[in-house]
Image (cartoon, rainbow over all chains, first blue to last red; front, side):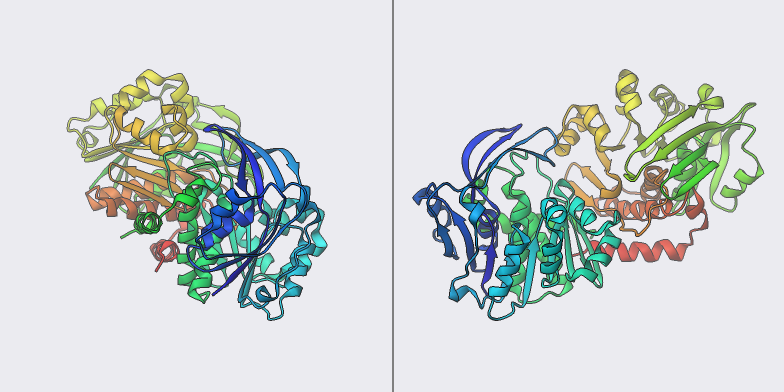
Length: 301
Length: 301
């Protein structure tokens, strides 16, 4: 069943201890759709500039990704420049050029307005709310990603859209600043009162935590010998997690755990190369066999 | 089968966001033996001062803990004063008084020299090596804990004792500074060339990693609503982990994973109260039922 994703498509300049890349494809919707489309058809709503051309379209070709909601405007695409030091858990933003993304007003194609599953990528919560309001049928679930920039600077609209959603994906610092609770069990209890009934806390190299009313699940990250570029790991996780959930069609605890496993495995590929390179080249056999190895790894036996 | 533990017995002054405690029982051998003795008989070699009296002995009474190697000397016991801020992962040392511990020269009772399992707590590596040399029968396995103070300041004797041991327990920063490798898979490969064939990396609230020649296992910490005092969590983990291994009598991968589960669960109790309070009051039913809940939590199903 179709999963509608609203987010950013961007070009990134990246510096990590493994190297430097300029002008490579990035943005939450890129990572998300490449990851989620392994499990379920994805519909993308995003905006790009004239620098987004055939080379970029080609990345998404031959996959169940519907670009019917990708608007191409005069000007340049969103551009981000960031640097990672030895501690790959934290990026330092060097430059942000919103470009055409600065005027982004999501306008869903008619065919997208009845999608059964909706992912609101990390954009202005006012826009996230507008997307929800454009849906003519309430999706079976709505998932949302956000960040401290909106938690601190657009708290009211964020609280408003949170009331409409089912699944919140944030990192530890975001869960804490949203709720004022340092302890994540308490943060989840608080988040439940704000709307979302499912919370995913992303912890980078330490894995993730998943909270539902009657479940706490924790999974480590997949251990890797080399991490080249952590950019997009969270969006790739979200894609695998939500893509799997959309394909499964339910939110049972076992399904949620299995979705977390696939999200974790997909993210582990993303970080092994720069940008979306590894995700593009990934075969089904590769991610299925890593998922099996990962499940064996965390299983006590 | 008996597990011989060499380490410190101390008094601690602790400040955490949950409160302040002065002069409470601490030290690696205290936490370790209270935890390990749930699974196997423990023999303790340590030194205390005259301030260690009936109140302290009582804590260990009625448990399979042999204090035949506890030496009581004129003077005061090792005393540590530390403070934790909102980030409970890091203690700030305010005062360290070695007292009688400064002249600690482990001299194993005859009956301890044939123990089949040996844990060398975090003390001067020269003393750790002397303990190994006092064993008249080479233990089936030897485990060792150390810290950056020795890695940086006593590297040669540390490398010497590492050649004699099977299981190394350290935290992430220690694994990195010992090997010069940031990546933990690479750090393990390097550590194997130094002696130990099994590596446990303790990650505090993020759980632990376990490496053997053909296994990588990762487990999260047990999620808690309140952490009162993280002091002793690592030693409690080591006690549960090694106590379980000694009781099982083998180092199979499944046994190692199960040992990690029990170590994690024991540590989760320690941090719920100050010092050894919670560990003292702990019932078998409590830790067995938390172990079951934890196993269910990390199992995909």
